[in-house]
Image 1 (cartoon, rainbow, N blue to C red):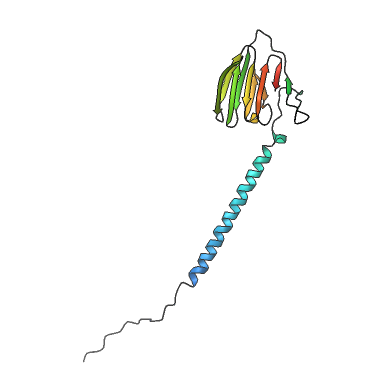
Image 2 (cartoon, rainbow, N blue to C red; image 1 turned 180 degrees about the vertical axis):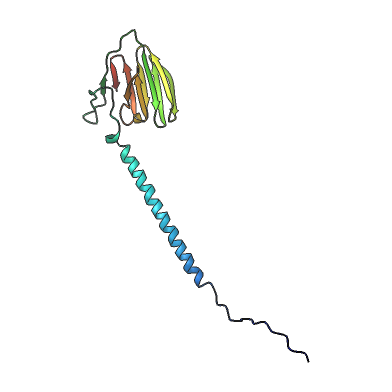
Amino acid sequence: IHPEPNKPNLNLTRIGPRSAARPVNFLLRLKKVLIIALILFVAVFLVRKAAAIFKSPKFSRPFAASKTLKPPRNKTASKVDIAIKEIPKSTPLGLVIRVKRPVMLQLKKDGVILFKRFMQKGAVESITANDYISIQVAKAEAIELILNGKNLGSPCKGAIKNLEITRSGVRIK
């Protein structure tokens, strides 16, 4: 009289642990991440090496003041003279210093210290003197000199204890 209700078809198969598939996927993803990290590391290393090569002296612009620039012959020689066209007494010495990279700089004008400070990239300093201008710089390649409108470029590479600019020329002591 009472028919049996329809029983739903339940598939009661046993579900195995999924943890066996998970480590394989995790290891594959970890391998991909490590390979990408290694490629990025090598790329950064190569870019830095290339930048160092292009910043080396053989790729830098030569000091444009004159062709009479004489580098020291040995380590004990410390003077470098750069001849420029004689500046008349009636014309003051006008120097513009452009900073290409952050640098520590001390500036004297006619024997009076104007400043000693750290200058940021892009800074420009103008000085007018009657007799001479003296510069001390931690990294000479980080500055560019313009004397009375004539671009002299960067004096040299490394620290300069005394770069003296007079009417007769530029001398590194």
